[in-house]
Image (cartoon, rainbow, N blue to C red; front, top):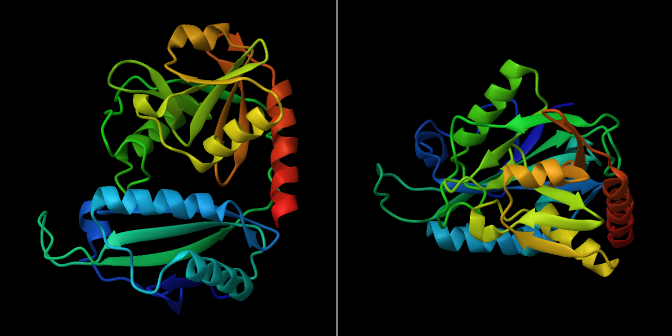
Length: 282
């Protein structure tokens, strides 16, 4: 089946060129993106994604693209799902500053693309085997106004994944420029100690993840205590569980950090809660 994408509201064949070489997303990483999970043909947590997107565009001073609002985004996603035959997929919405100019753009008009990649699992599932992780030591994330947003400048995460690949690790933990543990190379993190959830504060520079917010809300709704706070390597060693979250995979539990081993009892319960929530809304 021919892959399709949407570019500025137009459905196009995805196996042919769809943007020009002078696109600012390519030249400068000048833009922002959202990763949206499609479950049984329906976008999950779309209101939360849209709200975060609007906050990010405001920070980057990019105008909302013409023809793109909350309703049209859902319509475009459903159009792609039907045309590509992908009821279970990872959708990526990319918004870029569609302007000539070098570092100083001539205007702030927004352009956008939407693409799909199939996901084999129909709903969120917990990984069968725990991830092997360590702390990435070569670079740290700066704490600034861009830290919580999904900007196109993702070199830190690419470098962290290359480091993992060289060492046979599944993922790694990132630190901010103060030395606090803030996230993984692909999402947010939670630790569990004595039945209580702890996750890094947004003030420490972690990504303001949609799944992070959903897990916090699910925990509170089910009487599980949650604290947003600074975490350090000692907290990892004292934890009973460690898991990562993102919008496409849901929860992924960690089996080992160096010599430390973890269980996944609460992580498994949270995945069940999450699937029930998604299917109820679909």
